[in-house]
Every structure is written in structure tokens, then in C-alpha cells.
Image (cartoon, rainbow, N blue to C red):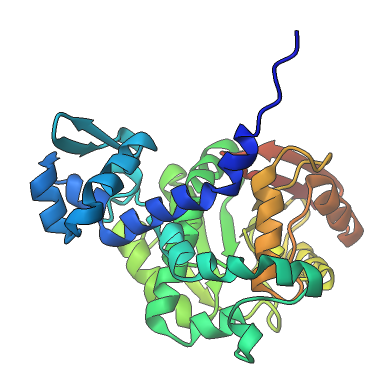
Length: 337
């Protein structure tokens, strides 16, 4: 006998922004960082966070019901994953991407319907402003938030790449569009024989160097300033691009892959990782919605499947490609020259 049809999934998804904004506000207010100091009573916690009495208990108990907090009697504490990943003072903090979602994406996504009908970005460009990258790179504070967000959303995959790829056969690597440099740091820490560099616009250098120093990778990971639109990519045994290609239109994607091919030695590897859409385009909902996010944020960016990327790599001259899952929605595609 088949299960009865109910509207539960429809209603849960249709109101999913309630749960999302509850979590985003909790990150903004600093709930998890405060509770990382230790469990706290309702009165103590709500007072320290500056919550209004009308909503404080509902807000904190909603976080309990969503699984982000625990409560025993009147005392609240972080769940294990919240404590590890949402405490701003821990190196494992991934809340940067949530801070950016709260400050920028949540508002821009309110105009998704317009984007679907016009094909036009719905961010700062909509009002005649500059593109997302020009806007971010012109403001050091916003740039630092953006670069931290990139580290947060990528760290799990970065650690998997550092562990799974056969690095013993390599001596050098370069991370293109390096942001804070977390991918380069994770690879260097896990593979002491390697020398690596991060390639990005000069404005990124201070943030990169501060991050690498704090991670204990200074001296083995260096910054290479440049613009991948106008400059050749640095030469290395392995070139990596993480969450880079989806920002750009097809012609730019192919151009960057070709530049990587030209910078690699025979036998060298290009690693591209994204929230790759499954080839059937029916399973990786995050990857598909990330592509919608590119619609919101960029003039021509879109996400793609492993098969799509493999075809562009082979068009550029690469001879072998393979796709390997990383963590969550992310997978990497490896091509050999």
C-alpha cells in the first residue's frame, strides 16, 4: 500500500527561509560564540546577547528544535557541530559564508523570479553599480568577509583534496583564485614535501599572508599577484581552481582551462572543484541552486556537471579526466596533460 500524499514537503520547503534566517541571525548575534565559553541559563544568555524578552525564548528554543543548540532545563549549550563550526574564535569556523548569505544573498534572492524572467543579475549591478567582484575588492572590510566566506564553504573539500590526491608524485602546486589561501594551506600542512603558492589579485595579498602565517604555513606557501584574465598562470606540477569557474560564462571557463593547460608540464594535473551538478541533473540540488545563485550574482556565470567540464578539458588538450566526490555537494574533476 502506497504512502498517502501529503503537503508536508511542499510546506517545509516553501517556508525553509524561516529556518535559514533563524540560523543566520544566530550567527550574526554571536549565539554560538557566546555558548562556546560554556553552557548558560536562559536569563544569562538572553541578557548577554541583548535579546528582547518577547522573542528571546522562542528564538533560542527554535535553535534547539532545529538541532543547533541543546537545552537541559533552563540551560542552553551548543550542539557538537555548532560548537566546532560556528564559534568565530575557532579555526574550524565556517560561518563566513553564512555571514555573507545574511548580509548580501538573502536580500538578493528575494528577486529570483525577476532574474528567471530577465536573465539579469539581481545584486549591486541591478541599480547600475559595479559587479560583485569590483564591489567587494574595492572595500577591504567586505573583501575580508568575502574571502573568509570562501574559506568557510571550502574547508572540508580543501582538506579532502589535501588527503586524496596523489601528492607524493608532485613537487609544486598553485591555487588559482586563492582567496585567504585555505586550500594551499591545507595541502601544504598535509604534504610537507610540497611548495605551493596562491594566485590572486594584489588586493588579496595582506589577507592571504595573515591567514597563512596564522596557520603555520609561512615559508612554504607564498602569494603570487596577478590577474587571470590578463596574465599567464604560474607554472607548477598541479594547478587548482576551487569554486572559480562557476563565476564566469562559457568562453571564460574555456579560456581559464586553456591557460592552465599551457602552464602545466607534460604529466601535470589540473584540479577543478565545485558543487558539480550530477550528470543526470536530478540529484545535487545544492549545485543546481548554486547555479541559480550565479544567475543572481553574475552576468554569465553558471554551474556545470562533471561531464560538461570533462568535455571542456579535453577540448583544451587534456588526455585523461576523472571525477571524485569530496564532501557534501562538492566533487573534483582531475585532468592530466
